[in-house]
Length: 317
Image (cartoon, rainbow, N blue to C red; front, side, top):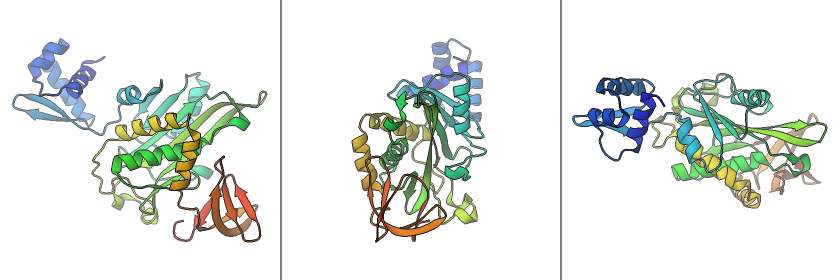
């Protein structure tokens, strides 16, 4: 552990102001080394209060792999990168490189983020959460849990707890707040063709955390928002990330509860929706979500079950 890391750890754990002399003695370095370490931490964005009798750590929204890893109640490896073209691709590369799972990759900025159907989405440095989880479930394909459903419930629940709000889920993978999208989820499977077994699952997501509303492109102003649209977060991204994954791993063992929560949070049930299948447009009423996460739509003359695809509502597109 470097001097900088030791200083940060001591400041975070302290319930009192720590003088430069006390830090130097505890860590075993000079006061000059402490001063340099403080300056380096501040350059990275950490908030450290300078007082007449020493230093005090202030909550800082800096992604911290160790903090995340130690507070997720599941053995997991966490990697934080400053920037990534795509954390989904990073997770795919991790498989090729033989890295162990579960592996969580979190980026401070994503240069080429994409969602379903390879659609791009808006990202902002240090104002969003861009992450992907690599899992190795070792299950038969027919036993594959509805990971996107579980993830949506975990994300929505964590947001609700953090902000004391009531977020909603648009089938199948989008999280909405105040009728605007705040998060999108994407799941990809990597299979073994010979055994028809699921080798890996990669779950990725982008969450608009504290992007100021005015910073969104004009075409997204009415469609997207952030958890903290004024840009002033009252919580940290680390806190939300930890909450999300603790919820997700708990739901893996309680999928029935996840489905019940998913149905309660769905804002498409009972609504008129439109969708396209085989180049034909349909309009109907979303009436149910099955135990496997599929959407049942009443077309009037028949019912159709959707396992994937895009749907639109007249009020929220």
